[in-house]
Length: 414
Image (cartoon, rainbow, N blue to C red):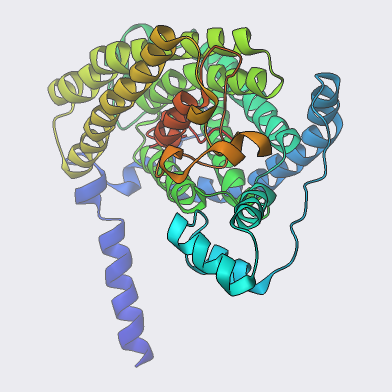
């Protein structure tokens, strides 16, 4: 029995690391075991160093939010408020948790008769109960400031490193002598830090304030980690570094817009979002297909030819481009509506970011269900309205992830 199980595991392992899938013709894993300059060739075992580093990144984040982000938030006038706790009621809590958080008029009337309460009082209970689950603005500001800092630093590092590489200026160098391309120290650090950051986000999801988009973001982070790891093991790190840097170019702008929104600097928030939109569309609809897809589809075909993992890799990149088009459309629609509408009425604001007073006047039909998350950004005072940010939150899932990150990562506007 044990022998059969070992044999089955051996077959599975051999299939998983099949040279016919991973490597071009006439190349074996043994060929990549030899000595090379720098850090040698990328190997799967290098990924093990990511886990302690991810734990370190998470620890740095906790210290950063406590000693840097929080004082900045307080200085910006964001209060460390205590959430209002609703009156305990088992019947309403059961409806809230198991049936709906937005009861319609018929259900409200039934609950009013059952509890002998005023309908208005039950509406207020549900409103305050929803608010009770929302993370405070201070928490969201600290989390966004951490992501802004990381995205900005890693983008600056990536640009500084890639500026000196030959494949940044001539993408054909991504395939020169492939797969015999040893890692440089800078490229290794770039990949490992990006991967460690996304592993740290995976860890933090389970202890952070729970949000509506928990499952979506969990899948997003998992997909991003898988795709970065795939490109590393396959030694497509040169073109992978270009893709990561390209996506990082807009992430910090969105986080900066969210910081401005939480601090109620509305014109700055609007300006940053417009800049983010422009950078996003130029990089995703212009540079990405003309620079990245051109080299992965045509230059690589000419220089190394196709093989199974080549098809898989390009299939992912083409799928990402389709998503880029969809996200760009959504972002353009948000920006266009903000420009032509000017003021946004209170009833149009997102439930996620509205105050208790605002939510009191909102109805379930205003909620933009399926697009809002607990991480909203609502630009008020006659500028970008919360409804636009609610739509933007729905697109964030893959915009912000560095490599193929179906992020998503616009990452939800926390």
